[in-house]
Image (tube, rainbow, N blue to C red; front, top):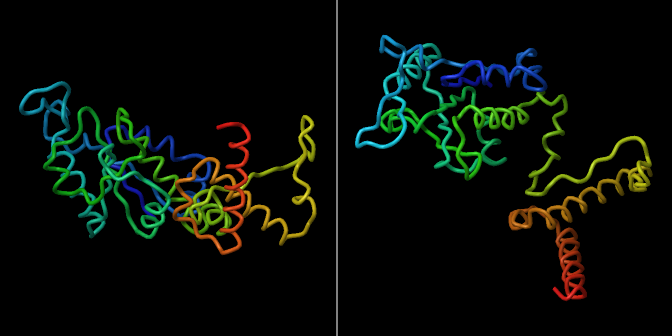
Length: 253
């Protein structure tokens, strides 16, 4: 996977993506990250890449030409026109399914806007996907780009060191991950569940799966509509829903 980030602040994204798992993946050659400074493609003698908006209004708007020229230079270098993801609160909300789809690409371009946004003509010309990380506004697209790159990279074989790691984490099968524990067995009077100490792998897997279902019901019940459950798991879900209903009834809720 090759990530190409069109940005006004290369040092921000390169610094954040050069450490931990993503940094090690780059060292192993599993992925690459480059930041392309949009300012390098302006023809304005003072290096400006923005101007006042037509029609008036507060703030400044990034000009179309530097953005498009930066992308076209990248395309000429690669010999192809890779997918362009524009970081915007107006886009689809990014999720694990989108990450899985994007992880199959060879190259991804992340376009990071600033100020009051980017001239619409640049977006119409080069953007293939409008994506958001949530219903709120940030000062620029760099942080969303880094979030998405981190998420996508975890799905690339070898990045996590274990191909099964990404498969059993939260949102796999639309369920949240089960609780995790490590040494010591007792901390502040709280014990690790006995089943995890039993060495009985089938019982452990059953416990973990049920904990994932229970946790999803408690914290993200909206995910359960798309969860892939067996008949027995569906019956277990219905039993804990009844249990919750009975508890609420007893409490007069």
